[in-house]
Amino acid sequence: MAGNNRRAAGSSGGVLKAPDRPLGPELPDASQILPKNHEWLPIVQHWYDEFRVSPQAQLVRTSPMWMSLQLAFVQINEMLLTGRFATMSPEVRQLMGQFGWTPASLRAMKLDQPLADDYAAGVGDGEHGKPRGNDMEEFKRRSRIAGRQRVA
Image (cartoon, rainbow, N blue to C red):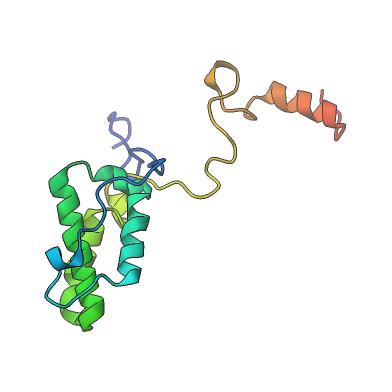
């Protein structure tokens, strides 16, 4: 029903921005968390480090949440080491969804991850907080200066 003052179902709840430094703890020593004689795979360490500097890392706010995330990486590590994809993939996918690792999970959380060129236009640095370049008078002025076209 139109006009009932409700937000559209697909509307965004905000844009996550990458933090300026890695968030959360480093992965614990393998001997403390992995089964005997297992080590962290380099790719798993890389993925964890990438997650810590990703926009989604801001969603992980407490120590128990970071511990849960680390357990997800334990499962990924074990799945890759043992090749038990059929039995471990469903749980790994569920954990990925809970932490916003996929575009679908970000949409479900009503969050958007900025694309590489989202900041190219600049925001809020024009007159009265308007984005620069959205003002028609500014466009006309720049066009006249550039001599590209005559604007009335």
